[in-house]
Image (cartoon, rainbow, N blue to C red; front, top):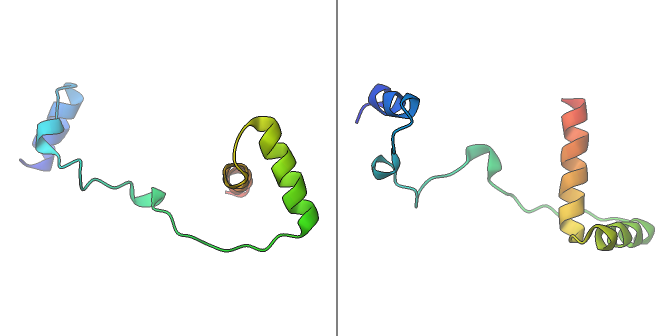
Length: 74
């Protein structure tokens, strides 16, 4: 199927799932890469305290806060 035909189906809100291989689908800007960051003990304590208050993991709160900051500077 040509891209323009798939776009027409999209515009008509038709089901296109049979034309896609969802097992191989990727969100290109969402691929993750592991990084190591060293924080002072007081930051770890503060992060853990806030994460516990919000009911999330330390990693989650770091990701959210970094994303918020990056959106501000973009």
